[in-house]
Length: 67
Image (cartoon, rainbow, N blue to C red; front, side, top):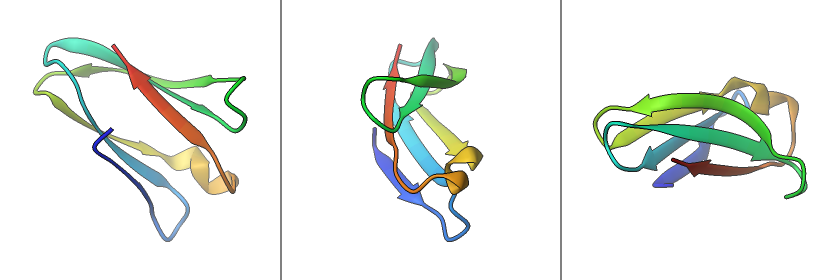
């Protein structure tokens, strides 16, 4: 992850770097045990931006991303 930033409205913006041309999973958990998939995105240029709009309904969370 390059950056994680909570917006004033509660959404969370993620910037992730990975190998261009590969898919990338973004997952979120509140307890490190129950990871929920949020998106499976194609990273076409090496840097991917993702906004978790559902994060506005939660006080805390953890993110992970992998190819």
